[in-house]
Image 1 (spheres, helix red, strand yellow):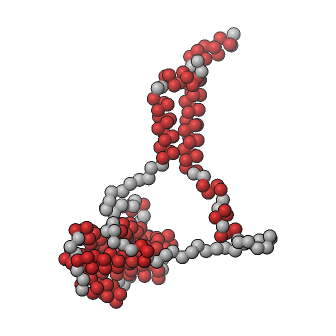
Image 2 (image 1 turned 120 degrees about the horizontal axis):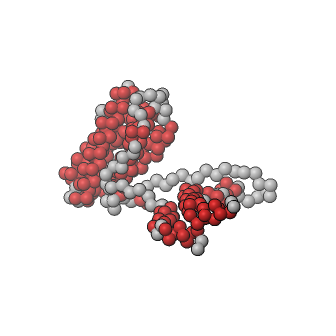
Image 3 (image 1 turned 180 degrees about the horizontal axis):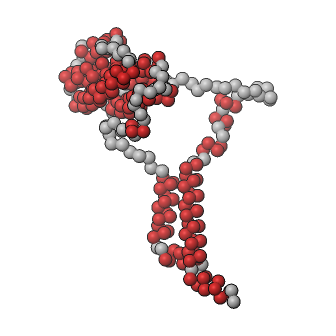
Amino acid sequence: MSAVDRLFRRNRLLPGLMVAATAVLLLQPSAAHAEPGVPLPPNGLISDTGDGDVAAADKDFAVKVRLAGLWEIPAGEMAQERSNNPKIKKIGRDIADQHVVLDKMVRDAARKLTIKLPDKPNEDQQGWLAEMRDAEGEEFDQIYIDRLRAAHGKIFPAIATIRTSTRNDTIRKLAQRANQFVMTHLTLLESSTLVDFESLPTAPPPAVTPVSNSGGGGPALASSGSATPASSSVNLPLIGGLLAVIVGLAFFVGRSVLSDPRRRRRRYRSRY
């Protein structure tokens, strides 16, 4: 009987464990968050001391976050009064409530960093609120969803830029939280089924980097899909996990062989 057979007979759970571990690695399930709650990032890992230079872009970001709350909170309140759709009422209430929380965050950050914040919506936002006040029912619903979805689509990439570039830890933490809130708001708005995706602005085309072509003619490699290295499709975490499973199996097999009492007796007898 081989050492592997003896090992598997001693520990009948081992084959099942190996199969389960491999299946987990292959499936790679992603973590799920409850909806429509805001998934909280590990905020304890980011300090909030006000340390680091505050750039002009950081101040502008704080102003934009404040302005968002100044018009989206009253817009959500109007949704409770002017919409006849329970789904729109709930979306408006959830977004307004979450902006109350985000507004407190940005005001606390502004006090810490001495950033001057506005106290009323800008001219465009006041115009959007006026549109909503003049509408009701389905007309209100469409205006509410259109205006908020467009606004969130504009600020979402701005949040990513600040989150990845700011030198100030307080702004970094604010951007991380704002990113979670805005992602939730986009999802809520789109759940209304009223978003006209065809009317949304499209992403700019990818930049093409020209390269020299000794063949003279033909498109640059940078613009071709074939330029992507084949190795980019390799799933390194999956390969590492499978290697760990193999190493673990080899360890258990080797340990079983070394601990076999009959093998020790043969060694003992071979000395004489």
